[in-house]
Length: 237
Ligand SMILES: NC(=O)c1ccc[n+]([C@@H]2O[C@H](COP(=O)([O-])OP(=O)(O)OC[C@H]3O[C@@H](n4cnc5c(N)ncnc54)[C@H](OP(=O)(O)O)[C@@H]3O)[C@@H](O)[C@H]2O)c1
Image (cartoon, rainbow, N blue to C red; front, top):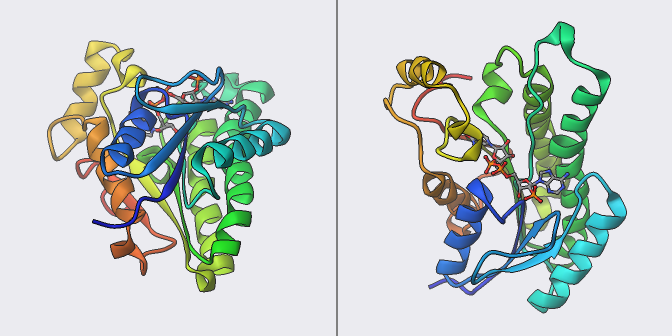
């Protein structure tokens, strides 16, 4: 078994982030999750973090490193929101808040994590994007732009830090059974299912498995990649 690593999962208190945090913890890694309250689900340690605020991100990392007993070696930037509406109706605030949380929030976390990783000369950064980032989706111009931006972010980090044993990859889930998708009306769900070659939504654990793989020693030569976990929905995108 590989040595335990220090793992930080943003937005790891529920949904996909929680499944990712649990998967690392079950594999024996030291895990800290973040959310906006600082509360953690049973069996996990949590710190408070508002990803739109640099000071909060920096404080959360300092607190997490204290709990972990060292720098973060695996960052999973998972915290994200949607504020869907059609382009013509979208306000600046709806656009900006999604970019600030999903894209700039991931940037703030990666920037802070890189300090420790550069010192260690190793690290894994995983950005949780979405099939929508490369495929597009009506009513989600803000969300799709934020999720596509993560690809440029990961690829530039790969080029900057690739020589220091640090990888940066994007995992792009399709439809996952979470609170986000539970709210979908039945007819929309049916229409989506018809477009997914696998014929079903994924479980959060299936996303976690891909995240764990790109964070592993076996994936040391995989960087700047976009790994879809979408049942074939985004094929070629
Ligand atoms: N669900 C899907 O089908 C799906 C598909 C593709 C991609 N994704 C992506 O996967 C990720 C997780 O999705 P999910 O469905 O599991 O989401 P979720 O259940 O809605 O959870 C979102 C998480 O992000 C945190 N968060 C939101 N805004 C934040 C902020 N400003 N500062 C700090 N934390 C913040 C939330 O913290 P609080 O608990 O404090 O609010 C929560 O932990 C997201 O990036 C999402 O875009 C989801």
